[in-house]
Image (cartoon, rainbow, N blue to C red):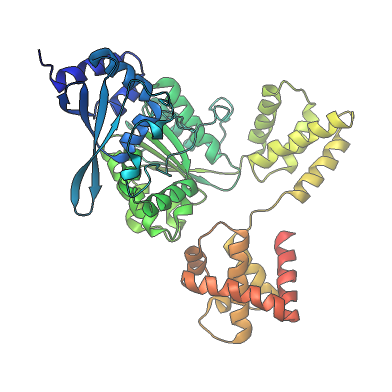
Amino acid sequence: MSTSAVHVWQNCLNFIEDNIQSQAFKTWFVPIKPVKLEDNVLSVEVPSRFFYEWLEEHYIKLLKSALTKELGKDARLIYVIRMENTYGNKLAHTESIPSNTKSIQNTQQVDAPLNTYTTELKNPFVIPGIRNLEVESQLNPNYNFDNFLEGDANRLARSAGMAVSNKPGGTSFNPLLIFGGVGLGKTHLAHAIGVEIKEKYADKTVLYISAEKFTQQYVESVKKNTRNDFIHFYQLIDVLIIDDVQFLSGKSGTQDVFFHIFNHLHQNGKQVIITSDKAPVDMQDIEQRLLSRFKWGLSAELQIPDFETRISILKNKLYRDGLEMPDSIVEYVAKNIKTNVRELEGAIISLIAQSSFNKMEITVELAKEVVNKFVKNTKREVSIDYIQKVVSEYFQMDIDTLQSKTRKRHIVQARQLAMYFAKKFTKASLASIGSQIGKRDHATVLHACKTVDNLSFTDKQFRKYVDDLNQKLTL
């Protein structure tokens, strides 16, 4: 009696569904279509090479068990891989699930003719650590709402984050853009939202990723001709958290692909959370169509915490670590460390370490010593605006002159030095640096950096300029 491919595959699905989590089943097995059954060989169609590789890497044992149960010990599975290209779709075949192989766990050697492909099957954009698409979310459970204390400086952002975690994709805060300066808790809050969602909605796929890593993955996918797989992967996410989105400045290709991923997620009721060091209106070299999307939801700013909030943060930190400290010491630290939460907690950790290692009692005098050293040694965030200010003052000119179109040698050199230090001390792209220093293009910035390097070796006076400015910018 002949058995249809549909019938066999449905029985396999029933077995598989009982052995994995529901979200993984929906993501990786529901899209598979049975094609034909000949003897003990079942052919199934999968949407992409990415899909094929993921199944081979993560579910080979489960597939083998299901097929063997239905078709016996000689069962085989042939994948029909739908490979998209610019000329339309074509199908490729590969084979797997031999019953007697001893290398069943070595997924790229399971009797599958991988060498017939002209490009690698390994997708470089796959994030290390992801084991299945109930995704290893890349979230840090230590960053949660319990230790993200509320104050006037963060109340709106925290409340919006709580609302999103209660109903991801179902509020008007989509996307939720959290912005603010360094060390004020943007990343902490983004993780906290993700952690809370995972606790309340275990079946949702949540992924946290930095914009820099996202860009690297996209560039690799273009090189290896897996752009469609890259897009497909991100379209599967239920809650996408992109950290430091300003890193996309000047990267038109990455912005374009993120635009399409964003649209797909938003239209399908998925939640997007973004962090940035500046508000959308201040973002340089981000396409207007993308900026307009950022403004669809809520932009919430994190500001420097006030004195009372800083005390609460320190006391909470001590409580969580099971430590005690006199209120006078806590107040002294809170009063003198005002810049951001990261430095605040860093100072208290340094104080405890000094006391513990040197077996000294924690006193106001010790606190003063530690705080003074800590503040002095803390690396200050250097902005492009600040660099232009320092360079202009050093050469006794105003910023408008520095940014002007004039070709006078001393002004050109000052402008080149500003570009050089902007590249050295900031994470801004060449295009963003050029845009902010006189509306130049990235090639001009690249030329400026090379010129400064060359002149530093051949011109003693110019070398002095570099050394003097470097010292001023690192004080």
